[in-house]
Amino acid sequence: MVWVNSSVLLPFLLSFILAYVLKPLIERSVDKRVPRALAIAVWLCLALLLTLVVVLLLVPIVSQLVPMLRSQVPPLLERLWAVLAPWLMQWGVHLPASMAEARVVVMPWVADHAGQWASAFLDSFLSGSSNIMAVLGNLVLVPMLAFYWLLDWSRLTQLGWGLLPPRWRPGLSDVLDECDDVMGQYLRGQLLVMLVLAVFYSVGLALCGFHLALPIGVFTGLAVCIPYLGFGVGLVLALLSGVLQFSAAGGALLQPVLSVAVVYGLGQVLEGFFLTPRLVGERIGLHPLAVIFFLMLFGQWFGFVGVLVALPVSALLVVLGRRALMIYRASFLYQRASDSVQD
Image (cartoon, rainbow, N blue to C red; front, side, top):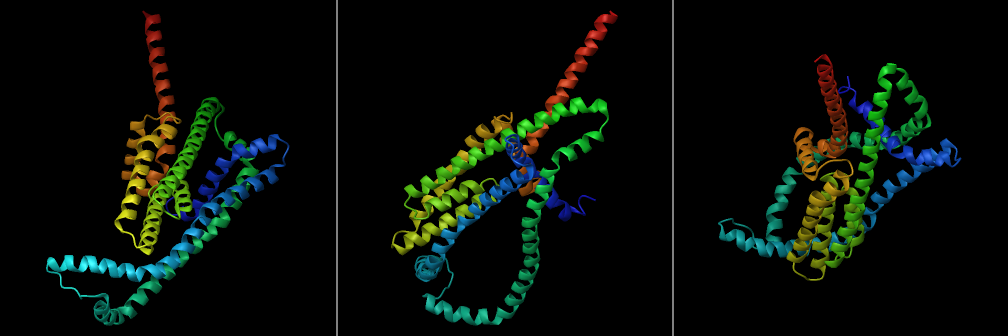
């Protein structure tokens, strides 16, 4: 049932996570005599504003890259053709001598396949449009659902506790309190990682002479909370920006490529082997080796989603495992005590 109705349950799950993250801030506001509904509305708006700021970081990047693409792509292709064509001809690959001759060969072939490409593009656009509409619908639905989660949080939790046998409640309450503390440590650690990486990428690209160092670096640092995707988008933007900028100045194309490789390579090493294990792993009680192991293991099991949830889920599993170990040891000591009494 969960699998079949996953598209319906997804906004409820995302809204619950958003509500869980904002709940401590709202409770502090309520303690300061702010009406709950007003506090929820204000913090939800701030969360949406923060998300919008991350998205708007792309605006100066795109606004500068698009004119550069229009002006730099043709001469850049000419330069690449002048470098690659002789090298490929040495290996027996016959190519036109210039881009003008290549257009004469390519244009008829493009005209013959234009109808097929247009049909494929239209089908892809129509199927993608439904997905885009679903995403836009969730962007509206998730904050609304989070508002109701937060508004009735106490009543919903009391209803849940009322469904449990009384003898389970004290032990489960302790486990949930410990899980809540671990998740808070995880969120704070992840925020520190994002801030440190935003500074690192911005400074690194600025030292390499990139004009768009600040928006690209901040975007990459804040987007690393989405494994692979955030880093990959930032890498592509930095590489594209550097190549176009240095190409316009008549510089060598190898310099921006090497600069991006060094900055982003060091950033990955810094994040994977120091920041995440230290700032996140130690806060949630995981050894650095365990952090790397769980990231690889969940990635192997569940792919992208597995990497995204690896650390919080593994932290909860550690809490449950620690509790199970305590129960086991207590039962073992109880058995030894019973045996000694019988003796």
